[in-house]
Image (cartoon, rainbow, N blue to C red; front, side, top):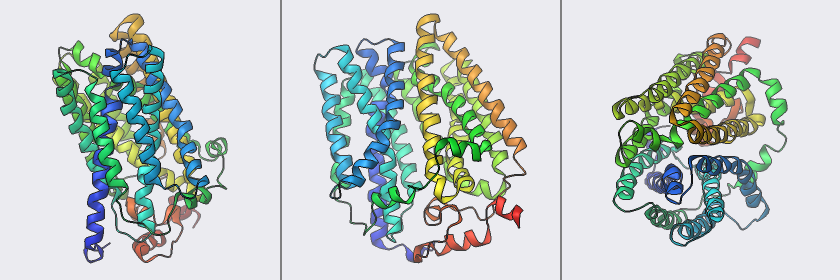
Length: 446
């Protein structure tokens, strides 16, 4: 994709889409990153916080297909309008539980729904970029998503300072402001032609189920089990990071710095995964992520100072950042175009659903029953199990999934899913890459 093909209109579109991600991840930070602080200020224990956030993770898996079904059923409903409606209702709910005396059960229920809906709407935000790309516009999703990570990290620092100087209720005001600006920008985005979420839904209607996918791809399932165990440990450490920071002598301001280190460190690894995949096998990268997770979680769990916590969190880049981006490519390589969506759903179920739920509930319960040391020990054990599985599968699988010299960048991947040729002018390079570099299994058959 050459520079000459990037018009002024595409540059303006890239900027506006980047602003969408900046606003979205800022308002997400104002809710999700401060769950323990906000709910703790409402009088909830660590166990109750874990139940709310874990329940939100489970509900997000249900809400995501529901939102997609709503889009396919109502022809006049667009993604910007759906996102605007969701954010308007979420803002009202967040303000209500912040400034009105409500029963604890109502506070927990409303916060759970807001949290779950925000997580479930992330694919819709990504779908906006895919629609523009299919309509022939030049748009770099990865760059915009990188802006979102930086926004999330910066918001964590600024909001920590704001909460330390006022109270946790101010988070709902920030959420409202960001949501209002997001609705303004998303509803003034240029039209993207005939692309719609309806076509994407029907395109994968004939895919296999999750059980059949697991049977067909045992290596993928094994990697996802390892990733799930890592998420169990990491979620326990992340949700209750404020308790860890205070345990080693830090405060709310230092908590914001810790979240910043976590979020900002993801971008470098996410950006270089396509290039790493050209030079290294998928198995080698899975093993590297397993080692990085071990270094990250064990360092945080054994930390005796805030500096040690920050050092451990910098491994977020080569652990979560690397594995999340790598699995996107690996699922496309393994599953093909028909079953790729099912593979992505399985990834969400095992990480956002099962992993996050077990991590939050178990972490909170252990901390309430036996103290923070029990939660940290649980995280170390889960990390050791997950890393061992990732390293073992990675080293064993190096020859099966070698380096792919023609691995596609995210924008090209959206044009040529799983080796299918798409005859569009904007996909010429993707078609060339697919023809020159078939998947490893096809090379073996030849």
